[in-house]
Image 1 (cartoon, rainbow, N blue to C red):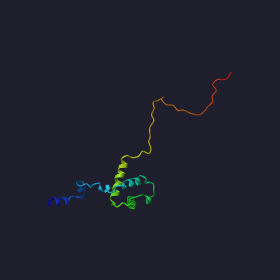
Image 2 (cartoon, rainbow, N blue to C red):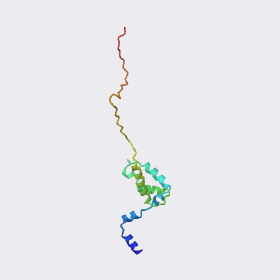
Image 3 (cartoon, rainbow, N blue to C red):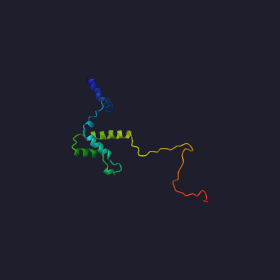
Image 4 (cartoon, rainbow, N blue to C red):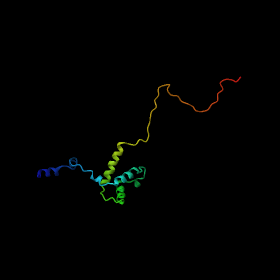
Length: 122
């Protein structure tokens, strides 16, 4: 038993995190506030000035106003997982579709109105 405790104390922090990963209880502690956080993150405007951007600290402070009593660490962890899930499937803003047709299969129309006189009236 004493040998196990000695080995455990000698493990670096990274190895301990690999052996004993933290549970997602901190995200679970957000509870009903996850919907509010998601709404705030989706409506965030990335073009805001640096001083007016909604940082994680500001999100945490806004949650406290909404009667959130949990810890700070749950909020950045939730924001990190939310951003990771959003980057997995980026939104398509523009698309380029090349139009390739065999020769003679397409033509261009000019929709202007022209009067032509083909034959002289008799």
